[in-house]
Picture (tube, rainbow, N blue to C red):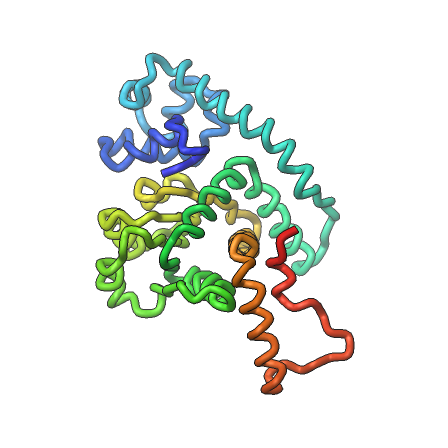
Amino acid sequence: MSIQNGENNVLDKLIAKKSSLPAKQEKLASYILENYQDIGLLTVKELADRAGVGTTTVMRLIKNLGYDSFFDLKRELYRMNVDYSNKWETVQKSYGNFNDNESYNVLTSVFNEGIRLIEQSVNSQLVENFTLALDLIEKASTINILGLRIYRYVAFYLEHMLGEFWSKTKQLSHDTEALYDKILQFEKDEVLIIFSFAHYTQRTVDAAELAHEQGVKIILITDLLSCPISEYADVILKLETGGKYYTILPIIALVEALVIEFGKRKSDVSVERIKRLERKLLERNILLQTYYQTPFKSDMYDKE
């Protein structure tokens, strides 16, 4: 798995070791993964109390991770937080800031909540892993996509957007009864994109484990680093989804960013295929020709 440029940092260690730890240490590891930005302010007892374990469990996990003391663990977490914060200042200049306006109705409240979650999601960690994910997708012979329950429809959207210019995609979310049969036919040069958010489904976890055993690269799009699929993932794209209102806006935004960037990387074929599709749809009166013709989607994939 990759949290930041493939470095073997404390979060990488926690994800790699979590499933093999004793139950109490696994519980503590999950807590740290979900709250690592706040650990630096806690004492050993405070961390133990918040995670619902004993102080001896904290010390045992620290030793398991290869640190000599709780101070060493906190120093590593602090270094990561400072590194992300410094890089985030540069990222913000690219994405700009949104102004929060007071809202008094559901429409504006939901829109503002979606904007807030997108702002929280786009940090240096996501930006770095976004590039790593695109590198895997670009090299893959086939792009396999999996999402269950409500995230099945996000998986369909990604397939539809890619399918307009890239035929080497395969949707696994339709027939879950044959899911394992399909995964067993994967080649090692394929990639699997998984949408998995709490509460996680066992079938998705099992699919990820099987694909990992096949040697297939996995891109995990999730909300928590403690997601049970994290240990099988080569790249993790973590998004903020929890808040006052349930929304999948950050997921949709990420999907569209992946498609646009992939389209730009494949612009030698994507632009021509999109334009050919537009011409055929216009010829057959499936699309209406308007006097003020808006730019078609091929414009998104032109290299700047």
